Length: 248
Ligand code: ADP
Ligand code: MG
Image (cartoon, rainbow, N blue to C red; front, side, top):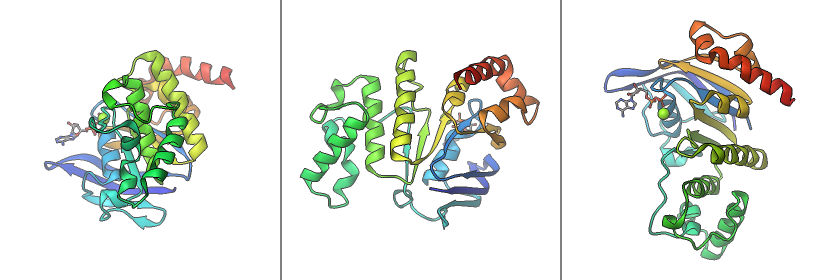
């Protein structure tokens, strides 16, 4: 769904962490938020999800101002890099946890869990306990759980950064496949430039609490907004751009 962030500022302990951020995200868009560590990426996602308070500005999802809407009523869901599954619950119960409170019967929940587990390529994992899963499998369960909530907007905060490189590639492909299948509007944070370029419809580049540039990966590479952006992509930019162009 369509998200508009208008002149958003967020303070933590009186320090301004987000400074006059404006950003629009289109329906079904896959936006990648990119920038150096500490620039405010996680803070922006948490603010959209309702975990941080807004000091100034508005967050508008499909015409509804979210500023005073509690986190669980926003229609957003956030997946963190350090996934926390409920250790004492089966995979199926983890996936459909939120549906219990919607009065959905056990049998339907089990079916839904099966469908979602198939989507994340964990068919037959319903009765496994989290402690028996690998890191990549846990991350897939976390994705299935996020999808179970049927979010209008899914927020992924460096979802692959704890996984090793060959697994990351699989997870990137899986997330793109799910995005295609479910068509949810997505904001994904990464500090990995190649990951950003390979996955984004559009990039938003952040420095020191401000969004300094948005555009397609090609736009950003060919016309960096300022010297910081140019330096951040550096030589890598040339290499990545050639790769993207040859893939097309
Ligand atoms: P990123 O995700 O881009 O690495 P963060 O949004 O986590 O950056 O953090 C941005 C800045 O806000 C950092 O300087 C960080 O130290 C500060 N910050 C974030 N959360 C808190 C918090 N709960 N208390 C104090 N400072 C915080
Ligand atoms: Mg972060």
